Image 1 (cartoon, rainbow, N blue to C red):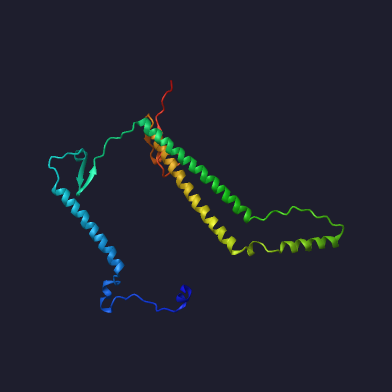
Image 2 (tube, rainbow, N blue to C red):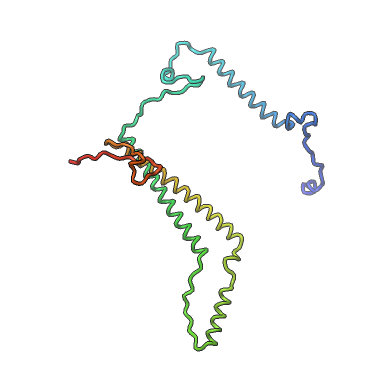
Length: 229
């Protein structure tokens, strides 16, 4: 009976649109839209009511350490910047762990790029034909050349199916993205290594452009030579 009832054509009920005179107010609000708006309004009312109740029954003598460890900026409580809880050795150890993770990511990206490059190279590189043919006379040589020409005229790379072409294009996009990510990781590793070296003891200064052997946009530092005991 249910299949028979579903086979009977029914009238498609359409939602009422916004009248022409009220087009400036946008789409006509439906009941489900009103329910969402009403719930949000009542939820905000409850929050404001609870805050008013807390403000009415608050203890004027109450004290929290946040009162002296934070300040109000534009009506918003912000914690005061405290001293660093890590020592120089602990910070250097954390930097080393971060740099180890960056090195691991760089090596992983390089392996994936090499794998993609080798796959795409095998796909679009014809294997060299090193087969040597021997013929008794000129007639047999012409016959072998014609046979080789027929084999070379077989469907090549121009007749690759569109499915494989799409996969190849996506592989090239992935290769470019991975190369860009590798460049960013190497740049980040260089900056972290420079910051690590700058934290080490020793007098150093930043070289000017006229002092550099090969000028570059990156900062170059020179450490003062110290005699090792």
